[in-house]
Length: 112
Image (tube, rainbow, N blue to C red):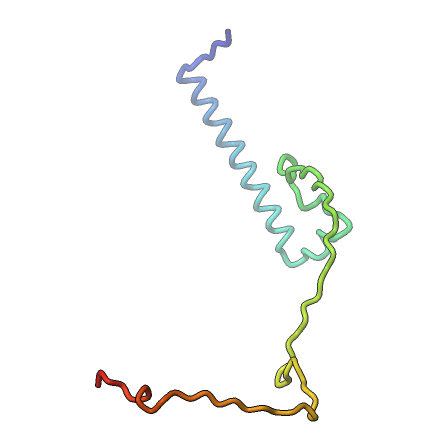
């Protein structure tokens, strides 16, 4: 069984330790910001040395490799041409007109 001593002196010592650690970490972050965004940032961090981007203890989490997916065949959309009909008819086709008409009695509305 683990016993912890919660005396006032031990708690004060723990608080002081945590404040010191917090101050140290804030200083590291400020230093990192100055190196990254300062006037000479191009000379400090380059694409060849990506390890400089991370402070000790602040490394990015390791991502598991993504599962391989089968490639899907691509397709191309057909574009509608503007101003052209899809169906073209030859000029030599005969034209027939059928006019369907109703009697005059049905053309007048009886409810008006």
